[in-house]
Image (spheres, helix red, strand yellow):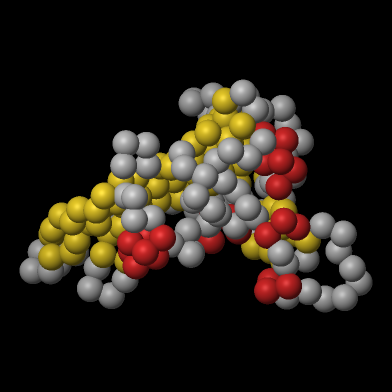
Length: 180
């Protein structure tokens, strides 16, 4: 078993042999989640550090430019709140149904906003729009009855994913990540 905090990554049909993260295929990747409550948005809220902390690792400004050329891009300068002499950049990639925003500092790029409906956007464990609610529930080992929204948070509360379902299909994924 691989894991972090209250959300563990599991391989289905685990053998007695130790496994590495590289040996886990996407179709057998599952997460344990910890139920928190039904929040004010009527979403079932869960803690799941491993997914929330790693879901966007494969996305970068370069990969979005290369793999999602259908998105329009724009850049906007932003004064760094810690040092006003430094100008950072907000990169926005969007179309009429999808948006991904990066905050570029002098040393690193951070995704701080993602709202997608296109199934070309893939997340660890083959989480993508268009998947069935049942498959999503199995991936996250959810045992509670859920409505049309599921929220996954990390344990320190600075990252939230909201999953929207309609007619038992995942229709939209929204991520808000806190930046200081």
